Image (cartoon, rainbow, N blue to C red; front, side, top):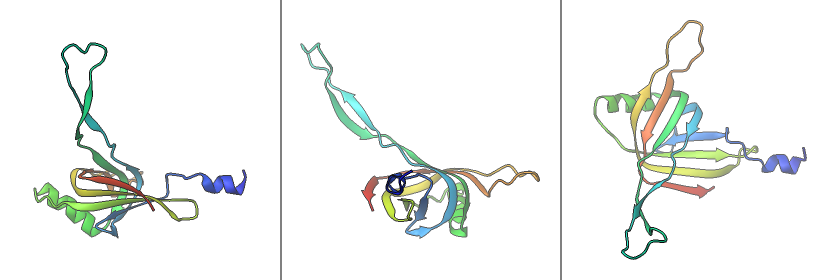
Length: 145
């Protein structure tokens, strides 16, 4: 494969997750939130060929991180949430190219943990300390780095 073509292929496995601007853990999987809007139908008398639609509110969505090892700060944030102390934080997911140059940044405001799944402990397994972490998301912006 031509070197120039190889460099233009952006593989999705080079990413970093930051919480409040600090790398807080390593994860093998990151499912970014879908940005989806509700649609309101407007019924207009005498208009039978189509139903006009207007944009409504953005639907609630979640960021999912899987198979991770987090810092003490990340673990404490999850434990605080289980104790019903909800602290909203800023999350940034950064995607890098094959040369480790930044490509895209997803900024997620007002995120907080809503689900934390611990792994099964088995002597013949190599699972990591945090199986799944789901975060509720506030405003989402995407920018080229």
